[in-house]
Image 1 (cartoon, rainbow, N blue to C red):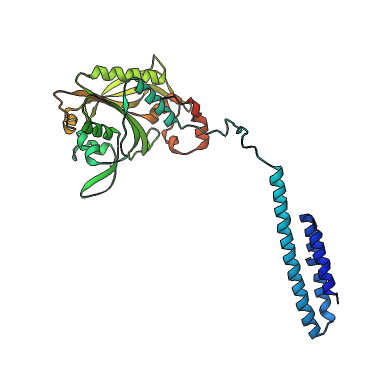
Image 2 (cartoon, rainbow, N blue to C red):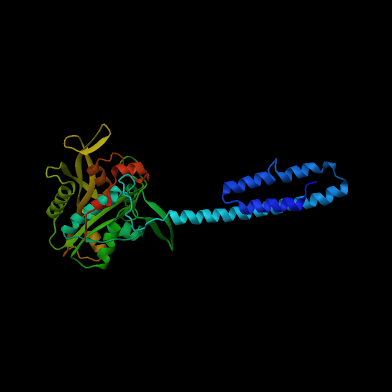
Length: 354
């Protein structure tokens, strides 16, 4: 039989002398491995009597348990010392400049880039910014805008309705014109505002999305006429697209909240997977406009005999498509980082609106 006290002292001395994790692993293998001294001691018990096996086996198992515990304690101490040594050597200077790479830098979404460009132009034209809630009631979205419950225009807008209370219908706004009604109800003329925001309709194809972005304008005073409306929009699109010979046209149209009404189209082409402004290849409708309907003024507490004005609404997404050659509106909402890398903008490119 192996003298266990002597064996214990030898193992503990070897554990204490281990100065690295590799040395400690060698000690563990020599003591507890398949060919280790403690394993061999267990195999040598076959020649002992039953009473000797019982006594010797208990002492040997206790020694194995102590050796395993001491090895684990030593291992933790060595790992802690190694970590402290690494922390001491591998210090990071937080004052050093951060590594910049155009491949890793974030991008501004085309919608927000275009919105900032639009707001910068309208600001120079003297418009103020107004905003309102995405969830609206039936009155502000339809009734105040001369669209009663039986009006067919409600079907055209494919509305997302929500559960209301006390028989009042709530919905996701189908246009930012809801903010126009709120401003006219709360503010006396003259009024000159633009209203950007998200709007929602049940529609989905290359030029339509269930959620998209609009910006609307409203001017109310005593002298504004259709000529002012056309001049305002023509100057805006020329400034936005930075083209003096921009192909565009106005077409007569119908909207319940304006009279007379028109739509504005911009010449464009879709060829070889590219989308660009071009004359003679077709048109894409980008906005609706017209003189504010007298009924809308009455509904908002403004005397149509004294005041008049114009309104317009345009799709921010479509203007982004036209200016930056993005062929499919649906990709705006795919959260595709490769797409954003291609069509997005470095933050420093955003106009300073201060």
